[in-house]
Image (cartoon, rainbow, N blue to C red; front, top):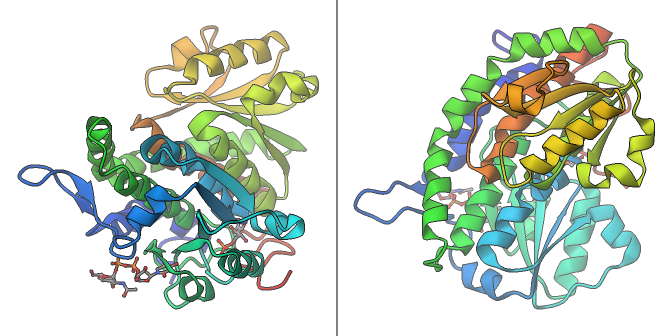
Length: 370
Ligand code: UD1
Ligand code: F6R
C-alpha cells in the first residue's frame, strides 16, 4: 500500500496536500453570497460553552502536544480565552487543578494513548467540558469526550506522526475561527485566514518540491552528533516538532529551543561545529529572529535558516548560511508549511544513516501503557 514510495513515513509526508484537503472538506464556507465561516459539525452546539469557559486547556503527548502548541496563539487571539498547555502525564503526576468552568481539549491521533486517556478521565471527573481532536473514529478518546472533531487525515501507519500533525493544526485553527465567529472586529483577519486555508494544499505541494534539497542537507548533516532548532512565536512548536522527528527516527540528538531563551543557557553550546536550524519566516517575530541569527553568527554558529521566499538576502546578508526558502501563508498557518521540509529532512537523515524509518527503535505507534 506504499504505492510509489519506499516507506510509509515518506508516503504520508507527500500525502499532506490531500490529507489537509480531507480535513477541511465541508467545514470551510467560501465567501461570495454567504459570509465566510467555519462549520464544525461536532462542536456547533458547544461553541457558546467553550467561548464562555474560564480557560481552555490543551492536553496531549508528543507530536499531538506540539500541534496544540502551534495553534495556541490563534486560539488566544480569536477567542480571547486564556489557553494553557498540559503534557498529559505531567497533568496526572501533579493532579493539576481542573474546574467545571474549564474546557479541556484532548489532542490524539490514535485516540488510544494511555496518558491522554487517563487525563481525560481526570478532567471529566472534575466537571470540565471535554473536547476531542482525534483521527480515529470510535477510539477511546473520541468516545470518552463530550464532543469533538475528527481530523479525517486518513490512516497513519508510520510510527512518526506527520500528516496527522498538519491536520491537527488545521482543525485547531478552524476551531479558533469558529470561536471567533461572533466578533466583528476580527472578521477581516478571519476571512484572510480562511482564504489561505483554501490555498494551503497547493502551497504544501510547492514546499514538497524541496525534497531533493532536504536530501542534500541530510547528506551534509548525517554524521553529526546533534542538531539544534531555534523557533519562536507560531514556530516554537515547529522547532520542537522538528527536533522530535529527527531524534525519534534518525536517532540523532536534537533539541528544539525557544529562541527567546537563547541567552539564558543554550548560547553556551554555540560554536563553529554544531549545526543549528533557525526558523525565521515572516511574521510578527521575524525581526527578533533576524537579531538571533546575527548573534549566532557572531559566535560563528553553523546556521541553516528557514525563511520566506525572497528573504534569504535580508536574513543572511553575508551569504554564509544555508537557506531553506518556503512560501508565505497567514502567520497562524505557517507552521503547517514550515514543518514539511523538516519532516523530509528527518526522513532522509534516517534513510542515509541506515535506520528503520517506519518502526523506530523502541517505539510503538500507539502508546497504550504508562
Ligand atoms: C459527520 C460525520 C461525517 C459526515 C458529516 C456530514 C462521523 C464520524 N462523521 O462529520 O461522516 O460526512 O457529519 O455532516 O460520522 N466527536 C467526539 N470526540 C472526538 C471526535 C468527535 O465526541 O474526539 C463527536 C463529535 O462531537 C460529533 C461526532 O463525534 O458528534 C462526529 O464528529 P465529526 O466526524 O468531526 O463530525 P462532522 O465533521 O460533522
Ligand atoms: C511522534 C509520535 C508520538 C505521538 C504520541 C501521541 O512522531 O508519533 O510523539 O505523537 O505518542 O500519540 P497520539 O497522538 O496517538 O495520542
